[in-house]
View 1 (cartoon, rainbow, N blue to C red):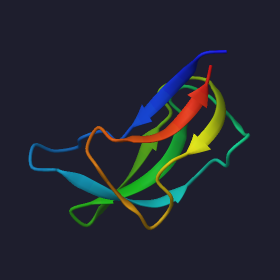
View 2: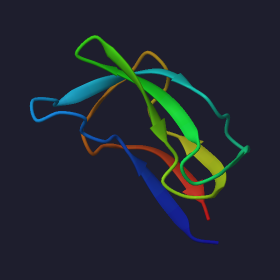
View 3: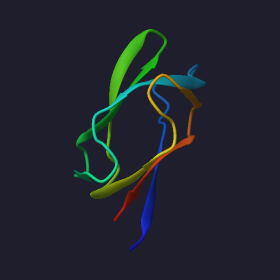
Length: 79
């Protein structure tokens, strides 16, 4: 089974990092491509980040309340 990295996307040109507000799926749950996976806050705006692919969420690297840089590996999905 192959793994897919979930990366923190950049929502604006000046965005350098964001805080994970909450995960909408737990480790072990199935996710579909495009389904909301995590809520992040950047520049006082909360945005849902969709899953980049379908599979099983196997790892959450950056937990709720933690910050990550743009393009950081925040979770892993087994596809």
